[in-house]
Image (spheres, rainbow, N blue to C red):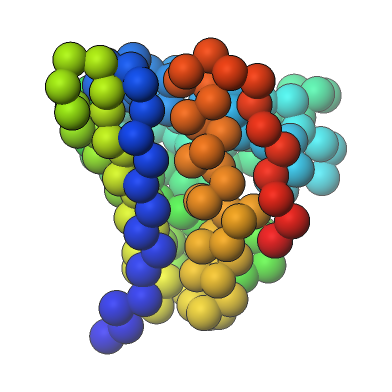
Length: 163
């Protein structure tokens, strides 16, 4: 079994409750429009606030495209999402092929939170190294967590670096 995983962390100046809310309730404020799989374009992305909830995007025309499901919902400390996108960034409806994204929120003092993200389970996909390399680069979770930090701290959201 592969141990291929992408692990990233960011520390934000905000209480754990706020960090969790921005990651989940305000997901669309920091997720880039360039990271869309809907052929109709991107308007927003959402994480439904419950186990079994959808993780998906909506296009300007109202059409929706699933990305995965909420596997674990433990506010404000832990969230696990299934990543049902294959190596070509197409939705794969078979949950047996999904990788997983686990995000934990740990208070560091009264007004600081460490956010740890582990994306694993790539061995279930047809192109594990390709997916892990893509999500582990500057245009992947590295840059995405920096954008999340900008949103939490009320800064202008930075552009993603080229992959």
